[in-house]
Image (cartoon, rainbow, N blue to C red; front, side, top):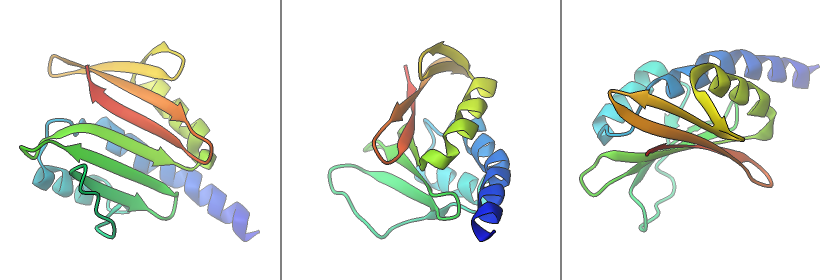
Length: 138
């Protein structure tokens, strides 16, 4: 019974969480802007400073309820250049439906969109234990 309630809660949260983060284009924003937006549009995601990778500069946000992680990769000038959204497979169908609603499908697991005259691509990559959604400026 508890597992069923958790699954239903996850689906309900996905309707609110995923579209809000992906409705906002974070590419080009600085760390302070991303932190402010994440607090306001996605308060269930928490900034995670528990691990440090010296090869990349990034902000890491986690949502333990729906088992998702978002990485915002930053340039040396503190601007977001790339977003990687990692999720448990239990969220796959909901996320694909959201991507299909929000963006134009260009190929299998590839969507495109325009924002302020710039072109972006969204790629879904299925790994063994999780999948990722990658947002990049073309």
